[in-house]
Image 1: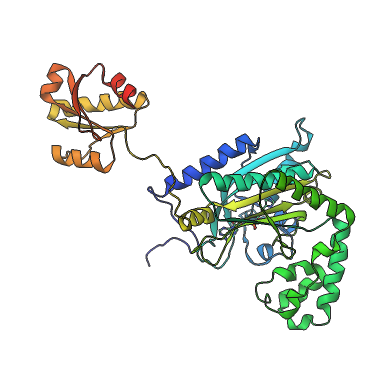
Image 2: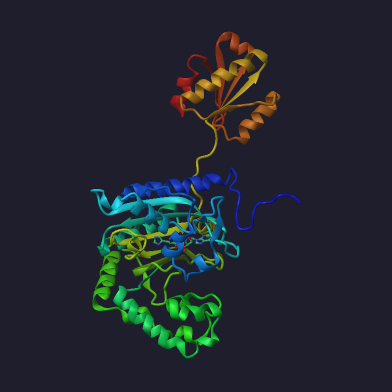
Length: 422
Ligand code: HAM
């Protein structure tokens, strides 16, 4: 059988990879402006990290992890998300002890979830995420949301919808949990087996069950927002006030619960409402996770962050017909006519490149006309033609492709000439 790419993964080929490079560069730019620094953690981690960090009752941990034993019989998992790993590293490297707090981190890298592949849902996808660890200030919740929104706007998206909610502090969550148990317990046998086991362990997870989403008890389920205590309400109000002060539009959705267990207080998602975007409209999600650092054996430290996938971002850009300003083409293509000239091109090309000029030449012994064709295809701004005759005179003939203008330049000056032009 022919070997093929695994389901839910993709090759990103030249011609497309430039779009990835463009948005990744934009991500790095914005992180640097917001003062977030890059962290790189391993692709695989101890399975226990995600069991404890993301939560035993989540779909991600129960159904979607790529878990395997290595040759030393350790259980390892390809990371399904970046937050648990960032927090593990924050604890392990004692970043909490550094003088500058909060610790503001970002990452861009592949994540792995065994999900049913469809447009916008991959088994390997690339997340850009940020995590701010060490501050209880609602202003940093607003900062994280602002970074996400600014990033989307700066790459050119317009049809964005920001949805926020509060999951409250421990006291509010406990009250809500009890209300959910009361709500579902008498009729839990009408729900899937996962939901039945969630009732005791984590009734909040019932609310994002994909199988039972249309059950009548779902719509009437108690919303966390009605169980927020005064402190949680104030916190949420403050976050909203900061967003308003930055002119960031949002809607409050009391049903937004998020699929991972570590959240409390602020939770948010950003959707695309572009026509033709498809079934999956969530572009990114995030929220506050004040208990996670402690859960992963670190000192009590609050945190908040978000992540988005580049795959969904590129889909949204397509849906909105956004053309990315990707620079294409060579500065100069070198063409030769005759053997002596051909040999002279190799050191000349080397010299151009050493001087920052994007340049190339033919390696297939093509005829003059075919070399020009290649130059065209590579969108060369200049084509420099060296014949044996020119070589003798120490000159090269340079044509500017946009204007058709042609001139002879001394071989000793060609580098400076092109540098000036480009
Ligand atoms: P999440 O909502 O599981 O949150 O994922 C965040 C984003 O990753 C989604 O909104 C989506 O853009 C993308 N994503 C998730 N699964 C897939 C998939 N199968 N294919 C393509 N894209 C996908 C988290 O992962 C949290 N760690 C976010 C966070 C950071 N919360 C706090 N800090």
